[in-house]
Length: 324
Picture 1 (cartoon, rainbow, N blue to C red):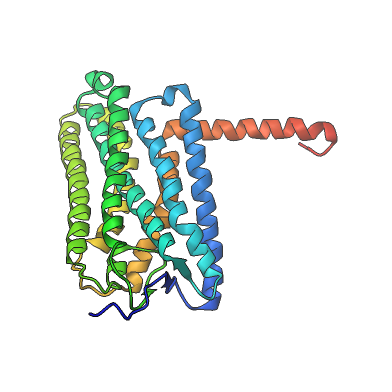
Picture 2 (cartoon, one colour):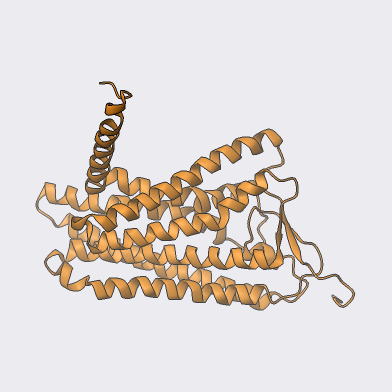
């Protein structure tokens, strides 16, 4: 294609979630509440882990970083999506699109790597309990977290620089509610074969590598649990893994549904629903799952609520506002 007489694209236009005005209002209220719960729940979980002495162990160390990633991961997509639900024209600048994808790809990759690190942590805790603290040292945990961040931002830099150095001189319409490289590449008037290969290689390597770590870890965990003689011990071991497994199934299920398909597949409403799930809903579910299914965290939340109620009563009672 001759691109010399074409106008370069300076902004992209999203299709958004829906064109139905009544449905847009409902979705705006729904996802506004989802985003508020996501931020409050994840900030609360980080605060609980940071301020509770007996939660200072590797499992909660990884969990606190997962919550931090979920806050920024959701904030990369959801605020723009909420604005677009109230806007007639859903646009984003060329630079804004590149920046949104950069952080989206980086934080999503970091989340997958943290989930695989947490599976390794559970493997050591159940299969080598006597050596757990000597294996999962603070230094090793910090190295795993730093490795996750380095790999996440490095691969995101590679994908973003490859995709957004191409020429865009035709359509600027993205049939989605955020910037995602497969859809952006379809709009380029340059040869995208190299970028397609880079994207497939990076996404495939991260997905297969982290999934293999999780599958191998849990295969060894299940084998170890089945060899336990104590029924109580087996229940305790399963309970320590259940929250993590639920988060893994929810996140990987929707991601694999969206990305692990032939590139020629048509983008459908189901893809948007899956995308909503892992960009907006999953970051909210992760802290809730760990809070509701983990006795230690649940006990601290209940104690905090009781303390708040007691403080509330002491403050209001002298003013004659509080009544028993």
